[in-house]
Length: 539
Ligand SMILES: Nc1ncnc2c1ncn2[C@@H]1O[C@H](COP(=O)(O)OP(=O)(O)OP(=O)(O)O)[C@@H](O)[C@H]1O
Ligand SMILES: [Zn+2]
Image (cartoon, rainbow, N blue to C red):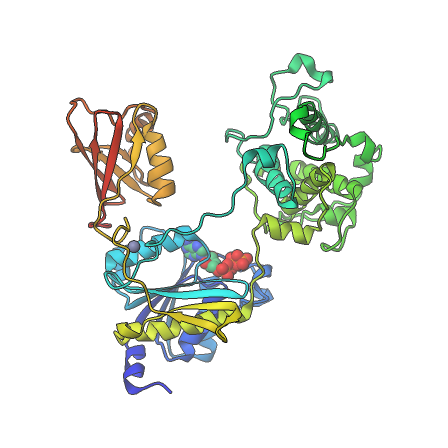
C-alpha cells in the first residue's frame, strides 16, 4: 500500500517516458495503475507485427501506427482521467531541449540503443532532472538511477563495445557461422545494395578469364546488356568460386587449416533459373517481396541445402533488382527486412558450405545477423515495476534508498533480483564531471574530418558539434546553415595539419561541441592535447 506521502508525490509528478516498446508498454501501464497523472511519452517508431507478441498495448489493427499514440489510447481506455501526451518523434529532435526537460520531475528511459540513451543522459544532466535508466536482454535486465552530482551518470562507466571480428577472419578464414553472417551482411550485402562509395574490404576486382579487357571495372556493377540471371551467376561465381580459388593459391594460409572449396553456379544451379524461379511474383509492397514465398519455401526453421540456398541467393538478388531497384545504393541491412535476411542467410550458408561450416536456418541466421536475443515479456514487466519503484523514491527525494537493480537469469545467493547501492559519479567522466579529458592526436596526419568524425561524433557522441578556433567557427553542423558556410566547413574538414597554430607557442582553441566548452592546447611536437571542460552543456 502506498503511503499518503507517496500518493501525493505521484499525483503531483510530471514524468517523461522515452521509448514505448517492450519496456515502455509495461511502464506506461504500471505508471497509470500506480496513480501517475501526467505522463509524456516520446517514441519515433510505428508498430510492427513483430512487436505484438510482447508489446501488449498494441493489436494487429495498429500495425503501421505511432507507438506513442496507440500506447496512450490503450491506457486511457482503463485510466480515462489521466493526461498522457504522446510525441511520435525522435528524442534527438531539437524541440526536446533543456527547457523541455526542465518541465519534468523525472525522466524514465525504455530505449534500445546507446546513442539515444547517451543523448537523454546529457539532457537530463544539463536540465538537472533525475533519470531512471533501464534495459533488458532476454532474461537479463537492469534499472539504474542517475542524479547529477549524487550518483554516476549513464556514461560514467565505459560500455562494452559490440563484439567485432578481425577483418582477415571475415574475408579469408571464417571458422564459425557468425563469421559467414558478418561477411554476407557487412561486406557482400553492403557491396551489392548499399552505398557504393563506402569502403569495403571485399575484393572488388575480378580477374575472371572472360573479362580480361574490362579488368578495371567494378565486378559488382551490372554490365551493359547483361540480364539479371547472367549478373547473378557472375556475382555468385566471383565470390564463391573465383575468390576462393584466389585464396587457395596462398598455400601458407591453409597449412594448419581445412581448405575451402570453390563453388560455381553451373554446378549447383539448374540450367534455366529465371524460368523456374520467375513463375510466381507474389508481393507488391516492400515487406511482401520474398524469395522464400516465390520459391515455395515455407518454414524459416528449416535448414536449406546448398542448392536451395543458391536458389534463394539468386532469387533474392533478382527481387532486389526487379522490385526494389530504387532502394539499391542506399540499403543497409535490417533484420526486419525479409528479403535482406533471405539474401544474407543464403549467402552466409553458401560460404559456410565452402568452408565446411554447418549450415543454419533462416530463423537462426536472422538471430545472429540482428544480434537478437529473443525478448522475454516477463523481464520487461519486472523491469518496468522496478523503474516505477525508483521513480517514486526520486519523487520523494529518498536518495539514501536509491538502488541499481539487476535482474539475473540464475539466482545468486537465492536472489533473482540483485539490488546494489548506486555508485558515486566517476570523477574523470567527461560527460558529468569537470575534469578535463586529454586526447592525443597526430596533427601531421589527422584531418579535421578525422577529428570530427572519429572522435567528436563517434567517440564522444556529439551530434551537432560547433568547433571554434579563437573567435571563428571552423566547423558546425546545423539544419539552417547558409550554403556557402556548408562549403567552407566541408573544405575545412579536408585540411591536414589544421591544428597547427601559426605560433609555436601552445595555443588554445575553444571548442564548442554541442555547446560543450572545450579547449585545445597545441604542442609544438605535432601532438596536441584536448582538454574537455564539460561544465556548460547545451547552454
Ligand atoms: N532516438 C529515439 N527516439 C525515440 N524513440 C526511440 C529512439 N530510439 C529508440 N526508440 C524507441 O525505443 C523503443 C525500444 O523498444 P524495444 O527495445 O522493445 O524495441 P523494438 O524496436 O520495439 O523491438 P525489437 O527491437 O525487439 O524488435 C522502440 O519503440 C524505439 O522506437
Ligand atoms: Zn558521468
